[in-house]
Each structure stands twice: as structure tokens, then as C-alpha cells.
Image (cartoon, rainbow, N blue to C red; front, side):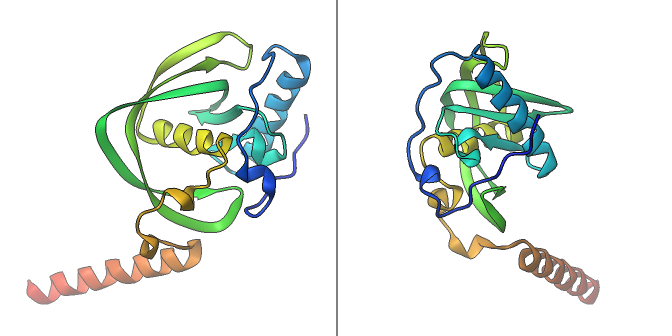
Length: 177
């Protein structure tokens, strides 16, 4: 296995629609999935799409607890009108984070790392990660989904401002007590 180079925002591979994987059982695809899993873990990511490692194919890997899973030629169906806004980062946009609205639940289908058909339902963080990764397959980066750019910034600044906000709330509560 190998650690792959991650494409960063601005690289054209991140802005195009990825091509379908012709054969999920191809040994080269299985090797790519293994290398992507190793790369994602090494970079402390929650998910990684093939275009992020300069391969314009429709597949991604994600963490499922302690296990790395893959979804090849994924199709997502968003369930219900419920939407959740949550903080996202991206290995292709290092050091930044933004608050992104996503569907709260979804159905997914495609092929797994062995090339077998798979389908299921995801919610919460798993649904968020899957939507983020499928966006990569469609040439969409998370800032393109944001609706409030006051909720976008460098990790260190956001952490500092949230610490300051928490301290101000605590101080106000102590004054009113």
C-alpha cells in the first residue's frame, strides 16, 4: 500500500464530474481503494474521494468506526426534508472549516471494496461524510454548499473565537447569578 498525494482546492481534477468505475473487482481498483484508505487514515480524514488523489473515478472511502469502507459508483437518495447544518473540513482544503447544510438521512447504494452490491441507510455523521464525498465525485467542494460565509474560517481562528464566546457566556451567567 502507499500514501497518495492529495489534490488541493484549485486543481482541475476537483472540479470535474468523475467517470464511472467500469469494474469494481479490477485489481487496480482494489489497490486504489487500499491506498486511499491508508492515505485517509494517515491524513486523519473521515472520508476520501478518488478525485482527491488525482483519480477521476466514482469511488470513495470512509471511516465506519474502526473500519475503512468503500463505495464504488455510489448513488444517494436523500430522505425527507430534514436538514442538519454541521462543521466540515476537507483534506483538499487544509486548515479551513465551514458550516454546511446537508440532508440528515439518506439511502445509499453502489458496490463495496470487494465489488459486491451494497445498499443501506445512513444518518448523522455517516450521511454527512457520504454527501461530502459524492460532492467530490460531482466536482463540488463544500464551500460551494455553504449558505453563511460568516461560518467559514481557519481552524485555529474558529477554535479561538469559540473559546472566547464560551468564556463570554460563562461570565454573563456568573454576573446574572
